[in-house]
Image 1: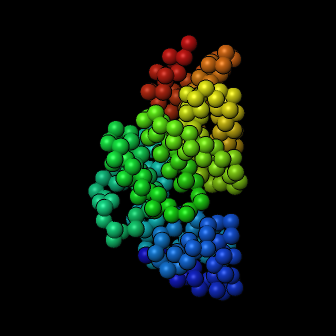
Image 2: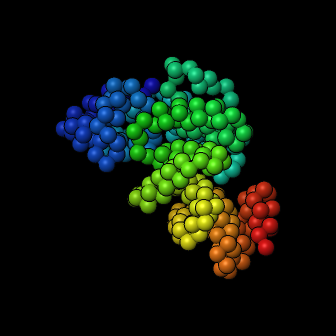
Amino acid sequence: MFLGQLIHQQRLNKQLTQSELAAGICTQNTISKIEKKNLPPTIPILIKICTRIGLTLNELFTEFNALDTASDEGVISAEVALLAGDSGPAAALITDIDFKATEHPYPAIFFFFNGYLSYLDHQSELQIFSAYNSFTAAIGDDTSTLKLLLNTGMGLIYQEAGEELADFYFNNNINFINQLDHINVIDVQRVLFASRHTAAYMINQHRIDAAIEFLTKALKLSQKNQIIKQVDHLYYLRARARQQSGRDYAEDRETALVFAKYLKNNALIAKIKALN
């Protein structure tokens, strides 16, 4: 059980108002809801709050399980796998969950799992939108990289439907990513996921130069953090963009192929080989 009252007490000990604690992290209203236990916070927000008031995550929970906190190693591993293209672990985590039940404050990321897996499984638009609406509610006014997952999920739906609203969500991703400062490992994975889908949309919209610049930034981020997963997609997309613009794309194509083979991404290998 999350101990919102401990945050409340520690905030008072530090002589901070709710607005002072929230500054640069979330809104004052979010802090109020967290302290009253009306809003299960996301882990990125929780970590920032703990740092500011001198608490650890262990002090905030009386017990740990996957339904109480998205910091559980299995949940993080499932998210990283899903963002990279392996849906199995995430699907296994939510198989027996009744998302219509309201008595369990499931981690917000579980609602993303539900929405994105529904999209990958080609479920009805109504079912997908319902899942993302729940994800939106679970996030609330959270300003973490969960917003990138939501924007990407909604953008993909509207892109597939040929709706102009896709532009709104993918542009939100661009603005969000350009404003990011210090991020942790799971944030990087989310940024790479959002970047590749956003760049793919930009390429389809013939915004080639912007897509190449965006992908180059994403690749630098992956290199800086020594992350390999999703890099095959990024190099493949940059090769596509360079090919469409008449530039030399051979090096990106070969690099994408090396990473795709290393990651055993057979579906992508076929797409890369089709670039001639």
